Length: 247
Image (tube, rainbow, N blue to C red; front, side):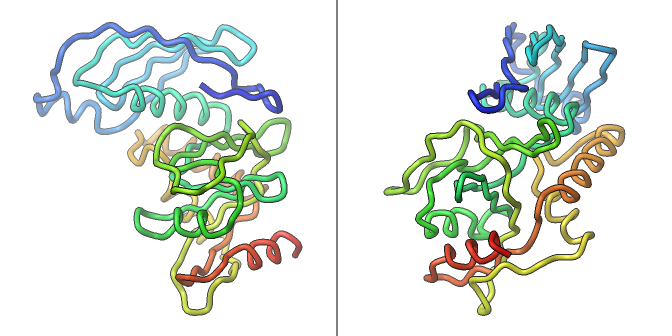
């Protein structure tokens, strides 16, 4: 699922799938999978969500085996990847962000915000290599947060992709349209926590898993710079980004 020559703490998930037809029509089943739930017992987990019921087992050295035992509807491969990435990352202290990310001076800069906020526009106007189109996995490795691109989204025409499969995470910026832009504006601790939490995949978790996610969000905000990027249409964001990184 995740892996690189630079940072291989998250290596491989092997997944076997057995089909059980389309059963999403039942209101009871829809309620059952409203939240993503992961119940761990040492190195094993039972996972429910996205219309799936799965068993996950850790086999060592960052490797897991996942058996999808039930499919309650026609589930895409991307949904399977999202579910398992979320479960394994959050157990390891990480998150999956709704983000467009660039490579800037050897680090990943993650732009977050709701659809239409301008994440893709800011990324494409920066003239920096494109790192992630829509989803970004982030996790601490030996005390340093790293980022991995996940499948999803589309690269704007003419954008040069990054050749790196993982990068240190240099910062998380919530994109906001403003006539004062382009500029990076600091946020309060509460704003930083909310900006990261509101841009995590998946959105709905069980209460127990929500507590784990909030702990991971708080750790990220403590160790990584989280701020607002004030974006103004038609202006180059790169000088403001470089000034922020030098500060």
